[in-house]
Amino acid sequence: MGTLWYGGKIRTLQHETHVAEAVYVKNGKIVEVGTKTNLEDKFQTEITDYQAFRGVMYPGFVDSHLHMIGHGEKLIRLDLSEVCSIEQLNTVLKKAVDNTDPNTWVIGEGFNENLFPDKVVPNRLVLDKISTRHPIYLSRVCRHAAVTNTYGLQLANIHKQTENPPGGVIEKDEEGNPTGYLLDQAQELLKEVMPKKDFTYVKKALVKSLEDLYENGFVGGHTEDLFYYGDPVRTLTTFYEVIDGEQKKFRANLLVHHEALQSILAHDQEDHPYVVLDSVKIFADGALGGRTALLSVPYSDDPTTSGVAIHSQEELDNIVQNARKVNMSVAIHVIGDLALEYAVNSIEKYPVSKGKRDRLIHLQVTREDLIERLKKLSVVLDIQPRFVASDFPWVQERLGEERMPYSFAWKTLLQAGLHCAGGSDAPIEPVNPLLGIHAAVTRRKLEETHEGYGSSEKLTLFESLQLFTNGSATAIGKEGERGVIEEGYTADFTVLSDDLFELEPDAWLNVQVYQTIVDNSIMYEKVEEPIR
Image (cartoon, rainbow, N blue to C red; front, side, top):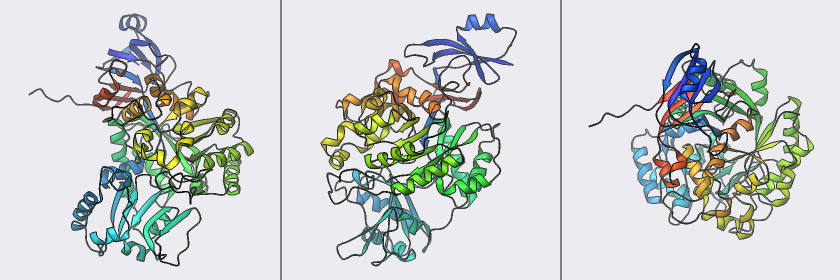
């Protein structure tokens, strides 16, 4: 049984200008690409299904780094990512408090103090004015920091004498009292006393996330979720249930947090066609926003700190070594250059087995010497172009001018011959791939008109599209079968309303997803609105 797709334009991404008219698919694989007439003549006895599409077909988009359940949580919980002042925050939270029973947690996702006029993180005193009868938990946009009110601190038994946990910071005022701001592992003190999420909630979040990913044109994603919902095996089983391979097809590669590894490996693994366990996930540092990304030289706007090492070099070595014992690659979160140095040291000491690749996630601050070392390793660099639009201009003050040439340096990494994949890090950033592609090409926000931050690091549209297609395939060793519309490749397609190559970058954000096709099956199709 074969399907002939035709009717619109096909951007195969075999090379920058390659365009086709039709593609013939059989058993979920692309048999041939060409003109409708030629393919009809050649395969007329096999074609049993004609699929006319409108718009422009691309290889299926894959987000190389996100948190699918977390993305769903953001969609169903209180979203603070667009709040632009303390006053607006108060308004949003007071409304939530008014609709919440006393002594029940009020939880908000994704505040960003860099959007506030004074760029000051709200503290417990600010939140106490909103409510002293509700514990409040607000995660920062990076998810490497959170703030709570006095009620929350009391429940977690965080007080003047409480010491910083390993890999975390409890911020305190001049008198030594906790401000309510908890960084990295210090957040776990609060999470221990927060209500546990049952798996009805987890499944609801995953279903919501999957629906949204389809609507944004994604055929797959590389996601890290297994450690955060109480039971890693139940979380994995939820993925199996939601992505059933029949009604719902989605190519999910799951990163396994190193602390969840043993419980996952002890469970009999299902041979699932769409949900696959991938690398061991490790956090080496935090984020630039909260100054917990680990730098080799102190922060330019706060010389008292160089960030936070989640693990010492020896600890990181041991985690990587343990991954190798079960023949797994690693995926290490590295934002600061010293964190990257730690990761490179560990990977050099314990190389990945032949045929596999490690991945290094984020790489917002690098160095020339580290890039040279990376070129000798079997690694993929997992970058999130949208961070450029979100983190500039304030990040320039954090890092100083001397560090900027090798910060957010996507073009430099590609020109060094390094494999790069593109993701959103949703829910940290919006999941929409066109926002990531726009940021990679323009290096600015949509509403801005300048030449771009670090304009020499701009990518071409073709390079940017490759990040979310062939780059994501390369990250999991599937570059010979996914990420291009070509003979022998998987029939995963994203159909957009317009040809991005024929539009100015700012117009890309008006482009709509018409269809999302996984394994030759339509998972999403935009319903045409009636003409009035």
